[in-house]
Every structure is written in C-alpha cells, then in structure tokens.
Image 1 (cartoon, helix red, strand yellow):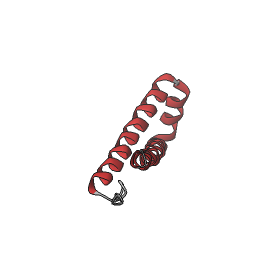
Image 2 (cartoon, helix red, strand yellow):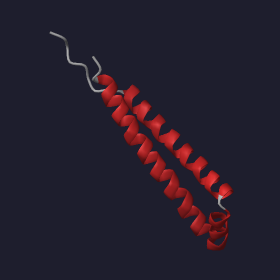
Image 3 (cartoon, helix red, strand yellow):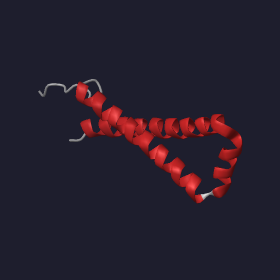
Image 4 (cartoon, one colour):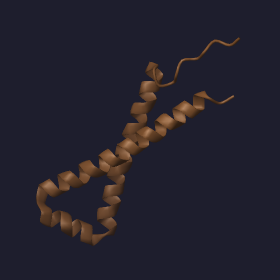
Length: 85
C-alpha cells in the first residue's frame, strides 16, 4: 500500500508555484494593456481624456483579471500534475 502524498498546494513549494503563476499573470496583463493602447488609438485617446483615475482603473482591472486567471489555471495544473499515474 502506497503512502498518501500530500497535495502540492499545501507545501511551501506549492505556494511558490501559485505565487509565480499570479506574477506571470500580472505581467501578462501589463503587456496586454500596453499592446492594447499601442495598437488601438481609441483606447489611448479614451485614457488620455479620462485622466489618472481612468488609467489606474484600466491597469488594475487588467492586472487583476489576468493574475486571477493565471492563478486559477496554475492551481488546476498543479492539482492535475499530482494525480498523474
């Protein structure tokens, strides 16, 4: 009988993996925001007219959305990696 292996998320290595996924998602959100403003002049114009609050909300929304998505995807990958035979 094999000993039960603990979940990959509970260990310190699992926490580092999840934080790494979140940081990659945040960086991807920043890159996407930069690419969106560079490729679509209407977005850049809208952000210029909105002032700093509009820019802050735009950046925080993109970074948070991408970071949460990447973190959840990373959690799924870590959990399925543990269940491989």
